[in-house]
Length: 207
Image 1 (tube, rainbow, N blue to C red):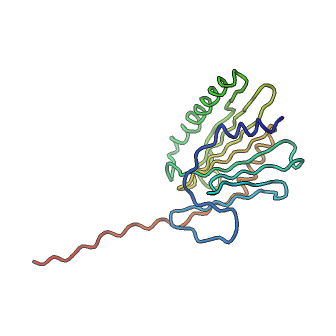
Image 2: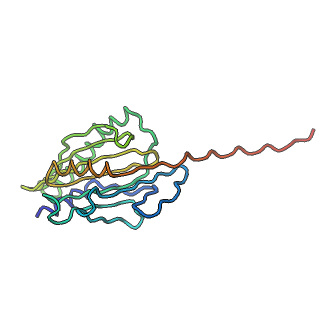
Image 3: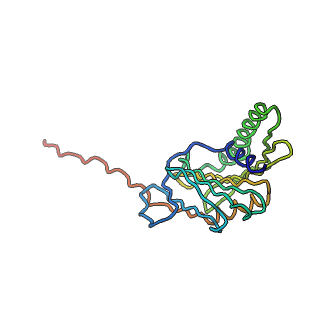
């Protein structure tokens, strides 16, 4: 009975895909100027199953039956970043005010639709640095009756790409540990800066 609540919790916070250059394996190709290559892998390959969308912009890892103490899911979503270098004050506001506010709004809507059976509560939300990039860490509790799931979310602003990593489980420590392990295993590589367009050549003028 715990699997559906984890899946439902994931659906609450999924964002629409954006643009990025992502890769899961195979022979690496040169990274185009202004692009980013994100390589995601399970920290323990024999414990996880992996799925991805056709365009590669969303990937979901699920712990195999009996491989984890509780159901556990880790999802990656790649979007176009609103800015290459977030302003620290703006990022702080996003972490402390805007993101919890949007979560509360989603929670209020679900509470009404479920006639009070479902609730969403932000436990913590703060700025940090992950993989060398400005980031936000959010912890949310999703509850339905006597069942609950913890959603540990990391949002990483890696140049032109915003990476959203969500770890969900009824076990709080497992959700936190899995988030840390998958972020540790993730590799982010930036291509060279985009070349500036050449100014138009000036034609010669005869006097």
